[in-house]
Length: 398
Image (cartoon, helix red, strand yellow):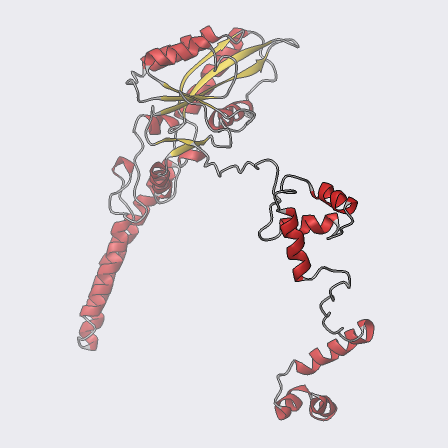
């Protein structure tokens, strides 16, 4: 390295390093290391192991002390008591700390007085919906009235698979009897079979009331609640309330109960039939809940799009045909090959352009682009909706 540093001013970095057989960055690194050593000094040698204290017990003395502590006389005594007793007898075998150190080592007898509880790793339980009317989520939110300290209570039942609002009601107060009436009417309206529906809610007073519990038992509906002291176990209902209250037409206050009902009636009609929900592939909850949504697969584009519109796949099929034609005529004579390719290209390109134009018109009419929205729908349909409920305290479910 020193020779390379001497050749640097005459030959340059590359030539000097090549002549001395070192890599090009070695001189710069050596300069940096020398600059650092000028500040911090050379590296200190490795620390030697600390020698044993001159008063430390040897192996025989440690064994004697351990046997004494484990003897029948001192087996049930604390080390401090053993130490004081041995001093009264004129015998010193070791300090109290040494006794504890030996007892804590291999073959010792020191441990925690109480058994320490080891909490197992709890998996978060969840509710999974793979079809409509399998898991409903319901909650109650407050709407501001005309004056301070006045308001109305909005009851909403939501299907977590399709995000479709199956039932709602506005009342002047929160009562378990009103919740019982709404749940009963909604279940009978959709004719939900017994033992097929799970109704999830938070731990509010109306949700855990005796009337609602007895109703769900009579209707053979599984009841599910959020974990205690956990505020985000009912996300679908909370998200729906936020969508409602962040709409531009949502008023700061409602003039009366009928005003709140009129606004909610218009909102839920828009939410179910016209709202493009991001959680279901930007489809409407009505189309998902009642099975009107159609889509094309991600990898298979030959099924077409809803409404009978042509799919973009035939265009790609024409391109594949062109490739086959090009391969078949590659061995022909130049003039024949050129004439054959020109004829095949003209017909295929015209047909391909027609397919693209029809596809674009349909995509603009449907609000999507080449069917990607419909393929995203089917991807979301394959992924079931879930409600995370897990935690150390589990899920209360009857």
